[in-house]
Image 1: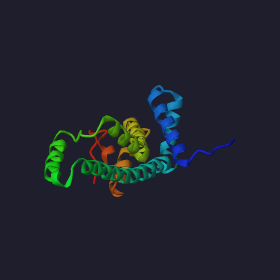
Image 2: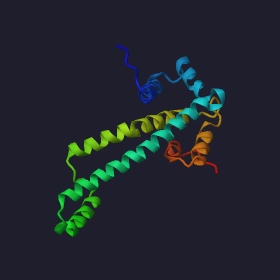
Image 3: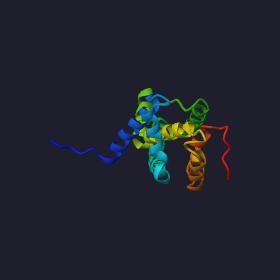
Image 4: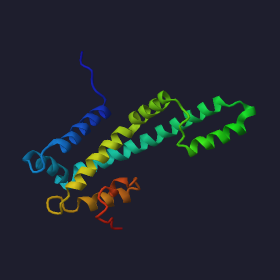
Length: 173
């Protein structure tokens, strides 16, 4: 039986392999240098693909987080009757000030797994890879990679959290 893997799963596996290679290949090994060179060839084509994957994951995660928040509201509303709505709002405010830990750990785990499936895993892995690439930017073999990423992320209106990985290099506007 030949079962095809969905493309998103394939990308997740590929991203996992790349992040593992970046973590485990020795610093100056020919294999690592070859891997890093793949990201700058063809005018940063593979970095562009990472950015596209990141944007898609961010959009999916935004939708998933909205669904999770809706489910949390349904949970809170089910706890309190109409009579207790004011008490419920006070209770919610107290919970929010304490980090919002009102749900059971099983429910929180379920929400976290939904977020992972909804793009969080891909977003984290892509940011991890981009972080490695920025860290490896030594100004010789990867001239301009940090600037390229910072410019691309800021122009596309993306969350530029990745630009804070190396704070010693200012982001030019």
